[in-house]
Length: 135
Image (cartoon, rainbow, N blue to C red; front, side, top):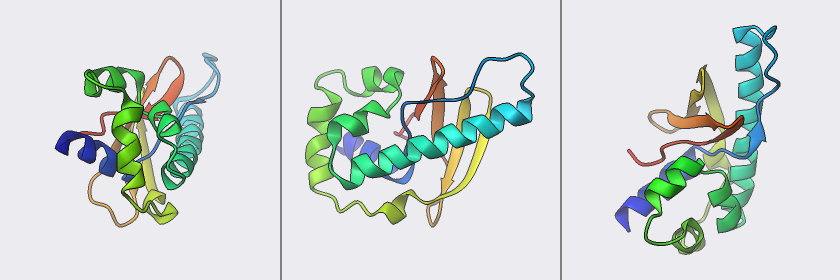
């Protein structure tokens, strides 16, 4: 249970979602790609904010990277684990205020206002998600 509480608390600080990150044009410069990724990550963050503050476990789990869902929730579903944690927490939108986004290819470090250390986001199959939420 401690591991999943950690997942929730880090995710509550981080936040991501199922948003594409631009096209695959070879004419796109790294800066333009990073800008598109940042826009996508901010959109995912808004989804996560909405899901967490409204206690929507299914939506919340949809913004956790598929590779991480398989790894973290082997014995039970993400929704069954996260639902009671969301109900037991008061999630304020202020927890999800982004301070910085540092994109590095298929991953990004997102800093949140008033929170130590970055939260990892990853791009899987062209969509940005909350990456490894557990330390």
